[in-house]
Image (tube, rainbow, N blue to C red; front, top):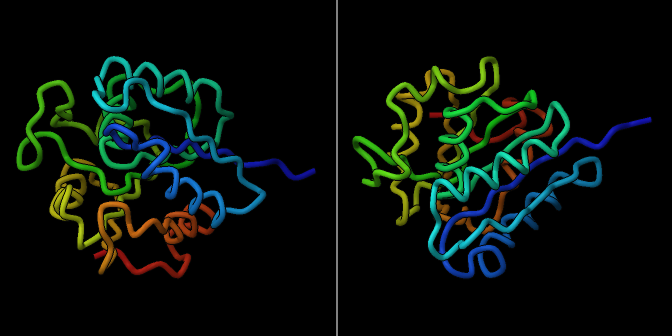
Length: 193
């Protein structure tokens, strides 16, 4: 009997994001992954005024409910909080992959933000052996594409996918993300640059 793989999709921050913006990313990912994946999309607390303490606690609760081998995906500020929470305290579950989508780098060279600032040794603190994939639209005017390079600089094993003509919402299309989750890095997605 085939088992259903699990994916946790963490929304970005901002008033109305869960129901008016990132719901389209969730729908795109769920559709592209198909029926053999269970994609979870929890509402983060106080999305209009996110706090690291509240969001990281919610993310940890969600991860604790997953099976080993799940994939975690974070969009925008949700990705920054997700990766920070994973670095701060390793999850109780074995993850298959960490995916950051249009995720701002909070720290030196990126966005300022004491509460959300990432540790300088981020890559060393993440769960060992878990692949990290970073997807960023080259037309992103919210979190500049250079933020993907900052992640690559602190997470030596991260692979970065730069997507031409795509905005902060990746034009509401997570097809490339789904392909990498389903088939790995040789899934016909644009090669990392």
